[in-house]
View 1 (cartoon, helix red, strand yellow):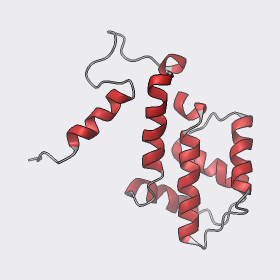
View 2 (spheres, rainbow, N blue to C red; view 1 turned 90 degrees about the vertical axis):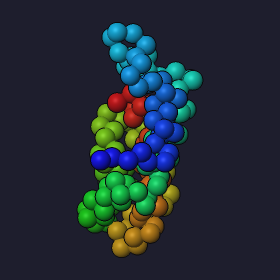
View 3 (cartoon, rainbow, N blue to C red; view 1 turned 180 degrees about the horizontal axis):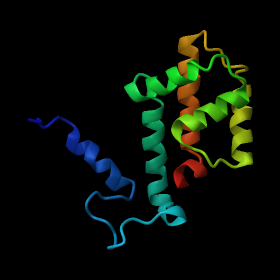
Length: 139
């Protein structure tokens, strides 16, 4: 039997803050998608929620994504951005967004898989940056 876990109710409230009140859609059609999904009241909540979890490099799922990235060996900033976007499922990134993310990654140089701590830190940061893009939020 499952037991009630502390904090479960609070966790269940996150979708409501992001505009998706579970079991209570706004219409019989369900929730809106695309540009209707993006509004100033809930966008910040969605970005913060995704960025918060993707930046926690000690969470099992995030750790797994980082290990899959590290298995690819040393990466150029371009390869690193593309691999991170692939890991978080942001597949339709505009050229402008990609170039801005690559410019940020270039500040740190090539991404070495040898330094596990630095690699995890850079990956978590890039996951967070990707989560803040319009492409990720609309995807």
